[in-house]
Length: 140
Image 1 (cartoon, helix red, strand yellow):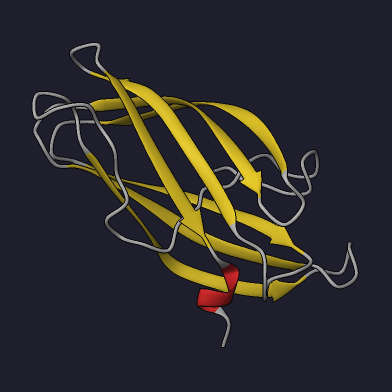
Image 2 (cartoon, one colour):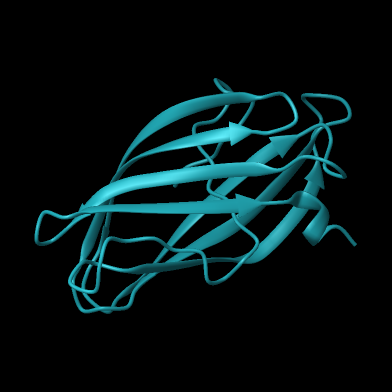
């Protein structure tokens, strides 16, 4: 559905290595957990010395209050570069949503990607979710 790349090549990436990364405000707001599954790595022919990591991002709402994610800020930490992306990811109450995603890196041994998703729950409260993806965690 969405793919990040060297900013303009493909359109987005989601990230994290921890399955318990989440954020919300208080007990009466939507609450998300996030994890990566089915992580793959492949060399690309278009850009020498560049690897593509593909994965499925799994968002799960855990408090019975749905969440709609509307934007994110994705940062490549080794080059201190970020970009914003607009979304419409709806996670109904107690539901799990899987989103195919991926990213490119020339430095998988040292790169860290940090993405902060923003949105609101079904009651209008702000929800923020920060994910971290370290390609080195998935290299064999």
